[in-house]
Length: 110
Length: 116
Image (cartoon, rainbow over all chains, first blue to last red; front, side):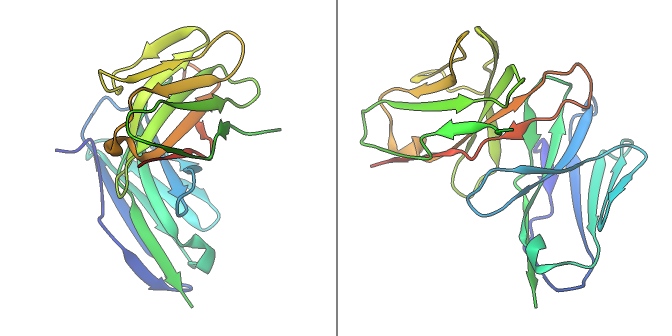
């Protein structure tokens, strides 16, 4: 079983759509959780951290279920600029390596 | 406030040559991580360094790869006798090294290594 698994994608949606990405992780001792965004051939950029209570940043909502070892990202009112690859990322503990999923590609069209 | 800097951005080497990749962390960051992204693959951890110390090199190939983060100057990832399979994007990240879950790694633009 891979350490971090994501929906394979790609997701092709029209502008204004709501889209959800799912992710599972295998290490129950994982401490920190993130969603990064990676545009084609560029570096990953932190989109948001994910907390057990769930958190929202504008059109983006992240949820964490520790019991199920499941992380989600919801994007509402999709924009063309949201087109990218979304990476689910897990960290065992502070100051250790990040473990990346392979990413899910989102393409938003007009 | 400059972010993480990497150079060169693109590097072409012939098989058997050496590749040196440099990373300057964000100002105030003393923790550096190197990751590799093979074509069509996710990022994979290679090595974690603090100034003058290798903390975790569990992701480094056993041969030909080495890394350092000297007291002065950038962190260096060195690949000796490169092979075609080394062609990839190499990303450096830095963090403050906070001892809690708020510690965040910020990535540089990467070095794209092509081995001919």
